[in-house]
Length: 111
Image 1 (cartoon, helix red, strand yellow):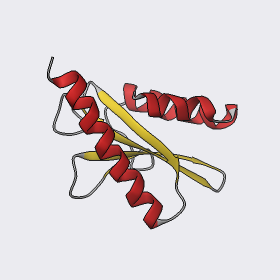
Image 2 (cartoon, helix red, strand yellow):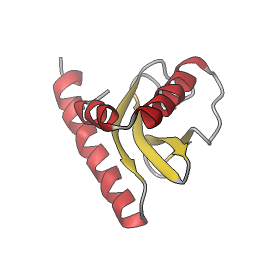
Image 3 (spheres, one colour):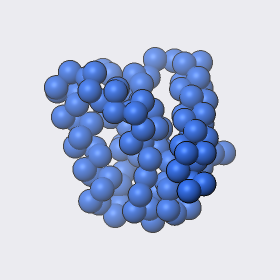
Image 4 (tube, helix red, strand yellow):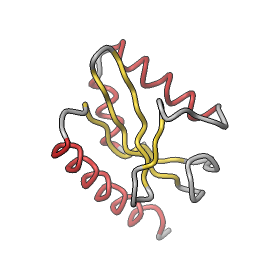
């Protein structure tokens, strides 16, 4: 988890945080996960974790650290999260995730 994701998670209302933790647990424990919870982002090596609560749609951009896909991964990096509003904002958040991933790679993969 990046600091950006942790800060976002801490800022959530308890009900939303509980749902986030539930979805994270599903990703950790299930070998087959519905697109309701995780979906590959086309033309990227990223995925989006999906959390829905009432009419709110939350997204977390996820990277598989130790495998080519999320299904085979035992380690994933939760980059950044946001409340999905519109396409322009969505693209901006994906760009932010790419920058966070580059920072993470610089800090941890060169060791």
